[in-house]
Image (tube, rainbow, N blue to C red; front, top):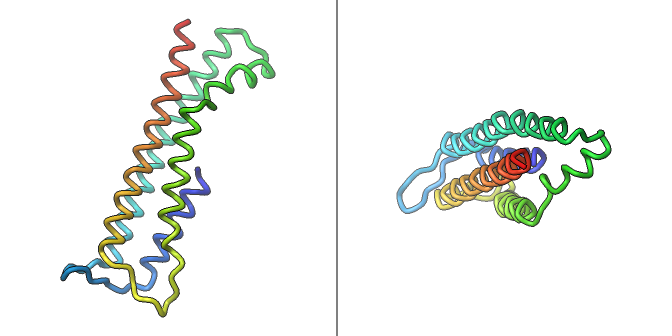
Amino acid sequence: MRTQFCAVVALLLALTGAGRTALAQGAACAKSDFEAVVNAAGAALRDLAQQNTPMFQAKLRELKDKRSWTNDEFVKQAEPLVRDETIAGFDKKSEELVARITGGGGRSDSEPAPDCAVLTGLQADLKLLVETQQAKWTHMLAKVQQELGK
C-alpha cells in the first residue's frame, strides 16, 4: 500500500507541478487546491497506519502469547487474520482506486492543466481510498479481538 500511496502522491504532484490554474464552468482550480487534496489524503493514510499498526501488532503478539505459539506456528495461525476474502476485497478496491487515480496522470507540459472536475474526482477517489483502508483496519482488528476472546 505504501508503494500505491507514493504513486498517488507522485501523480497528484505532477498534476499540480505546472503551477497553472484550470477553469471549469467559471471556477478556477489552483495548484494549491490539488496540493491540499494530496496533503489531506496523505495525512489521513499516515494517521491510519500510525494509529492502527502498533495496536494490531500488539494484539497479534498478545494472541501469540495467549496461544503459546512458536514463531512458525504464529506465522501459520495468524495468516487468516491478515488474509481473507474480505481483506482481499479491500485490497482489490484500493488497487482499483489507485489505478483510476493514477490513470489520468500521463500529461505532458504541452497538454492543458486538469480542470476542476478532475480535482473533484480525485477528492472523491482519495476519500474512498481512505475509507476503504479504515474499513480494512477495522475488519482486521475485529478478527484479532474475536480470536483473543476465545
